[in-house]
Image (tube, rainbow, N blue to C red; front, top):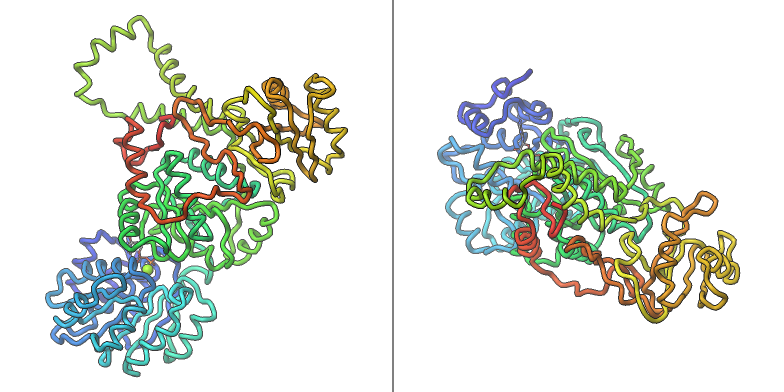
Length: 612
Ligand code: ADP
Ligand code: MG
């Protein structure tokens, strides 16, 4: 196996490599470092996120610049402030045994005067975002006219973000005879345009197959109704108590909503999108890095360059428009040789997009089922048992133990375990009790317009007075009209002639009313009720059309899940809560800490009033 020593790096850098704990070079490092050290050449290097590109250009760059000169000799352009700071930190670590090398970061959202001052002290290497760089050039705060090396890092992302003009502008201020090194995960048209226009017969290296996702990432998809995305997301999280994930939504608004809902439902979640201030984004990212946030809900743009390793899951709450974007998303997991899972929630009509992605990334997706409530209960129980097993006893409890022992006297081990587990089980089995199958099997769900549903529960509380409106998952396409549906319900439940009214049959589902005194009977009867092998499911509806039913409360499950998404009279999904930015970080953490006496262990599930 090739070692760093064989690549031609000087001693000071090899010492830094040892300190960083890098044992063997990654493929892109193995290929790029010798080329860059040995020759003055332009280079195009294609390698997935997480393959160690920073060191691939960082080490050669440091070795090649003249530390006795204070002129700016190297410029690294990167798409985001996050990445810019990350690269700067890495470069400083690489150069730690080099005496006179200054690496300065230039990015928007921070004082330009401070940055100018740092440059003035002499920065041989500048790491910059294109916007701020261009700005500083035009104000003559930097001089890159003597540049020897220009690195375009994450070139595809920079171009995705619309930095083409800025990059052209910046490059036009650099000497012609410099070397340009372009690093990118993918090679879309725009990147080849840049390569053609600004590079001179570049050498090309490719790691892995072009355009393919990192092979350590497993791809899965789940077919759900359009409105079941959120409950399905919760189930995926509940199935993975140690989840550490990025959840991608398409819009800032959805991103904020999903994060807010998760926080309200007691998950350690946070939002990352462009409507947040830089300060708020930094707070969220810091909490995420410290694992105080387990579920980071992000837009594609905001998540560019998230440099956190160990992400276990990427969840595509909605699919992106561009397949290219999917590659970027899934590349957030499976970094640095670790494995990761990229999950996609799709509706039936979106399934063909999965095929398109498969073709593009040259990897197969596995169709998975959203776990049932009972499966989740089982997983959580195992998690609890393991957690108890791994718990370090705390000497502070010793003084309480005699009294506790007295209370529990006479209960043997087996019974004690049984009781302990039951105490927890009851809490969550109540939530998932009668929870329905979220896997989309009938086409109706995707198209429903005014349907109102809860997270699989038929109302935690049954209305006791007035008329109650129900939703039932059969309609015209099942052969019903309003009369036959009315008869079917009356006959099935055993109600009188006038007891079922306001029957409204739509294509694939229907609504009807009864008086509240019949509600319990209806819900009891339509539990696990099948006609011709198919479940006929009745839920109390809150839609304004029907009166009644609006007083349904969630849960009753001992502070368990809040069932916040128990319907939306707005019809279009998320409830009309304010869309403003807020500091999700504090909230997420407070909740978890106040909620769970078990939250001392960081990477355990930390749900408010959760099972464990
Ligand atoms: P990329 O830019 O390709 O997305 P990075 O340069 O950010 O990847 O590296 C990803 C992670 O892998 C970082 O945490 C980095 O410290 C680590 N890494 C890079 N090279 C090595 C190596 N040779 N051995 C071990 N870890 C490495
Ligand atoms: Mg990188």
